[in-house]
Length: 73
Image (cartoon, rainbow, N blue to C red; front, top):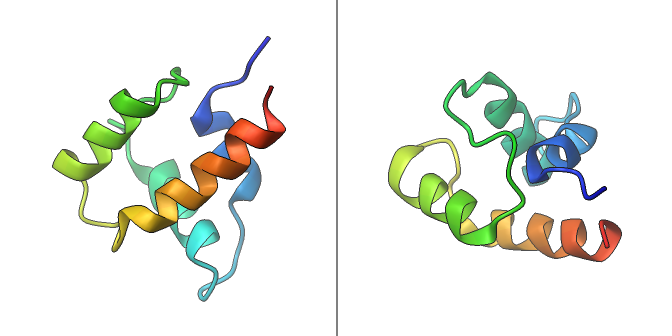
């Protein structure tokens, strides 16, 4: 079974204050509205673009998404 993007993101979460992926994951873990049970790129991307201010660049999301799709086949 394919795991959700959020589950993958939580595996990236860490204490770093300089790693963009870890910072994004930490913020997402505190976001109660984050779409936690989906693996749909458009749904997550739209949510991030329209609803959050903690992601300074969608490039960060796109890089993590590429890793997610590669590691979650």
